[in-house]
Length: 187
Image (cartoon, rainbow, N blue to C red; front, side, top):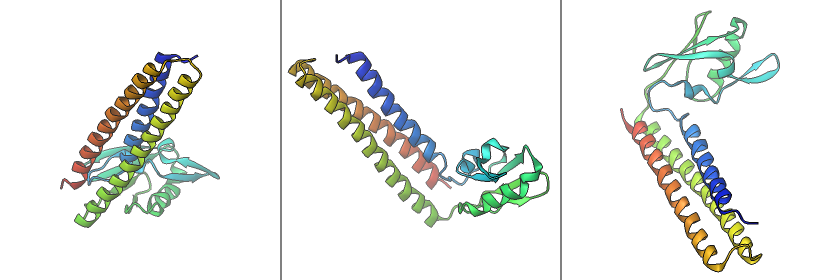
């Protein structure tokens, strides 16, 4: 039996999860200022297990161009330093024996443009993902109509509502993208 409220609640939840995943992914894009999110992609070999850096250390921002990594276990300082250096994100960590300082270099104009290009590709990828969610939802509506769980008028009404939900989420995605692009290009 086709349950309208559950269907649209599920659809909205899928769209929101996709948007949250997008926000999480773009948070790792450098904007020229320090943010602990910049190190989210880093994992450290900790006694044979690849462990996210955020689970091994506290990461603070003492000033806009510096990250401070304070490991919970000082024996892994060298491993954390190597992991940051080998992550190919352009950081050169400094190990002082107690903490690791990660200076954030100023982005060049060319690098900023490259990041904006990567952002637009990622934005398009998430738009396609949202369109796939729409396609699956429309298939579900058509199946419900074929099985006579809803009328043809309901099918049209629900299909329009699915499209409206998609349009709203893509608009939200583009707004988030524009804000991030502005942050990247700002000196």
